[in-house]
Length: 84
Image 1 (cartoon, rainbow, N blue to C red):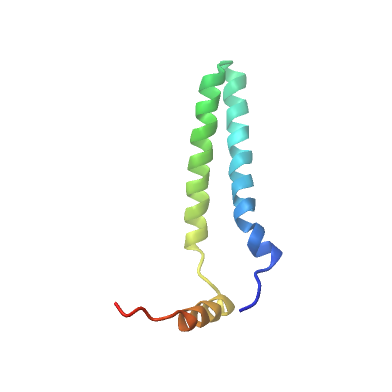
Image 2: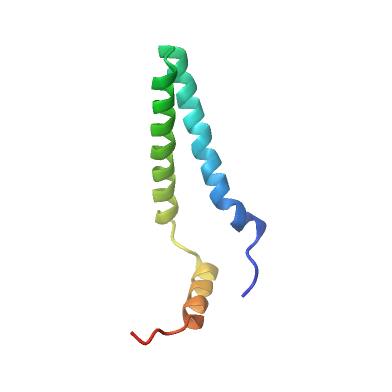
């Protein structure tokens, strides 16, 4: 099995950074409008979690292409069969 590429390794971090950017934007907007740091932190947390869930749903909805399906089938064939 080949080593994953740098892009494949950094993909989860890329998704977390996108969620963090959206959350920071939301937190700053709420902080500027309310001037309450606690409410801004709550908005930041809610926006971060919601953005992560939405991005995860989008990633799960993408169908693998032929190369990825071939790799998945190869990995399934190599996995040991459990006796249970």
